[in-house]
Amino acid sequence: MKKAIRHMVFVMTFLLCITYGSSMVQAEDKTITVTDEGSAEVELVVGDTGKILPSITPSSSAGSGSDSGNGVYYYDWYEDDYEEDYVDVAEETPVRFSYTLRDHYWGSEDHCITIDESGNFKAVKAGTDTVEVYGYGASGAEVFEAEVYFTVHIDMSQVSLKKTELTGYLFESARYGDEIWYQPAKLEIPISSPVVLDEDTMGLDVRSESSNSEVWVYASVTDNKLSLELSASKKCSTNLTITMGGKDFKVHVTLQPVKIFSNSYLLEKGHTKKFTISGYSGKISWSSTNPKVASVTKSGVVRGRAIGNAVITAKIGEQRVGCGVSVTTAAIKKVCARGTYIYKNWKYSQPKRAQNGYYDCSALVWKSYKQYTKINFGSASYPGTTKTESAWCRDHKKLLKGGFSYSKIQKMQLNPGDIVFKSDNPKEPYNSTSHVEMFIGYACTGYDSNGKPLVIDKWASREDGYGYSFAEGAICARPTK
Image 1 (cartoon, rainbow, N blue to C red):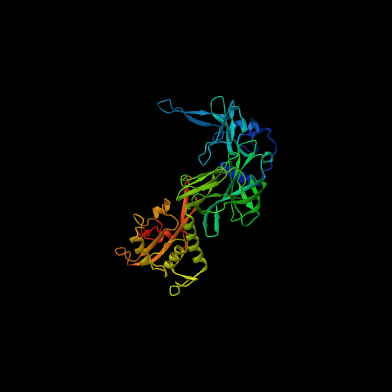
Image 2 (cartoon, rainbow, N blue to C red):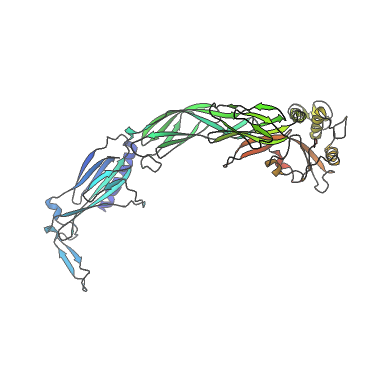
């Protein structure tokens, strides 16, 4: 019972020391004196050394190891009759001591101190330990017992951060229209410390706080490195307070979004475009997923070499930003721009679809193509319908083999200007068409864990990603085919 009470007091004392005892003195030698059936509570910092000295007093040789007062019975297990041997411990004084580290209740054998057979100890890491001291008389009987409770702190006065002014870069994780979401900025600060600090270091208790309510921060420590993750939605700065082992560290961080000029671009074949990055001026590695379609130089100059699609990637460290590039003709580039303009600026009206300033889905396709190409889908003076436009594509062999499939989007096999029809009856697709939509390119929305670009489909009069609404095998045509 006494041991249990002493241990409880020790644990409570340790917890209080973690909270309030961060300012410790330099490592030093200490001598710990204990008496029979006594205990000692010792606070150390990592690096402290010392020795446990059992104190022998007249009372040390009286009654120890026995509940009956002056002696103890021992069984002689080597005799067949198990005779009991009586030892009068009152007549003995300790001639030999042992020092044993008690295993932790949570099963860890990773002790924070080391101790040798002579009682010499050294504090090697933060934590708690208990040393049990036993003394034995000449007969081998236990005649002395004591405990020493150790609490080892980190000397935080010797701990500092090697950087306190940093810039974190925010890279896009998603985009919808003009709204952009960013990945957390990841920063790493080396820690100067006489001992290795880690997330498992007892008493380190890492906490973080941001002065800017729009900046969320998470901090962790591994192998003497402070790792920070900061989330924000725009360019900003914040003052961080990082608390480790009860000591506050101040860090100022500026967060800078890194953007490519556009995540989607239509480039005319034979033309070039200088791609730019804002928010970062260091080393950038440029690459193309299909150099035969769109090549890129070390300085970010993209050249359209053949009709098709590619993703141009700017790699900054381990992060990437990209742009879906479609190489097309000057006419189709204008057709796509016209379709987008009509959708954003004109009014939808089926009764007035033929008038200037009005459109419906088939009128949008007809007006966009008729203005910049010779294609009028068989109707020179009046917008066609989904039935007449789909039939014209069929009769003029403009259909894409296999029809529409979402895998064609993922493989970047659709080209700007392609049109897709919705049908109410798959068995009679041309007689039951109800909608037509114009594809206008790809947007790069990020990268997977292997660095592969992720792309999303773009449409003249629908939100990005609208392709999911088309049935597999739907009528899909390329009017310029």
